[in-house]
Length: 106
Length: 119
Image (cartoon, rainbow over all chains, first blue to last red; front, top):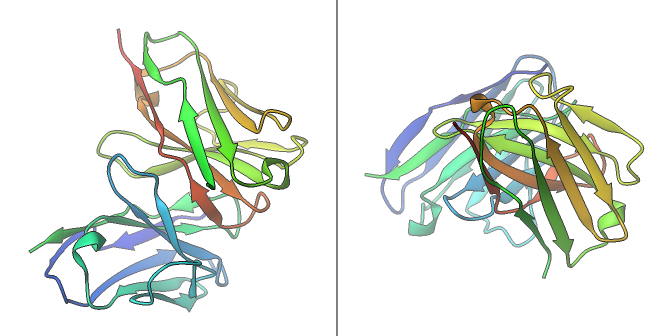
């Protein structure tokens, strides 16, 4: 199985901040990474696919980059509705997920 | 409206069974592979199972192989997960999720159905 190591597990930030989350894969997964946003009681939302492509309807303050084993997810100009938990997912093979990053209000 | 709605969760004793359902709407269900993913309380996401668009292929996580069965009825736009021989460690929110093919990004999630295994 491909392991996805996501960091940090949590972070505190303020509205307007830039936030960066990383995921490292245990082997080369090309660009087969997506990022999703999870809030309690709501259906998770997909934000990024193929490492850097924005899912339709997702605001441009969300972005992703990387290839091979190292991937980055960034939120610029953090908004109140962005406080949530974010997960990376690889789909080079059957899916595995990173451990999640909880973005909290500072 | 494009959505997935899970149901069938509840409290069940260890060793018993439960069947989850996931009803799709707003898209052509039979065109998509469908996954089950779970999240135990306070834990991260764990992929559980996937079935191809036509039902011909199924794959399972080692942790549920031989106990859980994924199936679908394309005439009813519905995905199922049969959970047998349940264990306390199966307690989790169970999500169904859509992907274009088995190895592809998940692009739509349901809200989840909570399964609690406890005596």
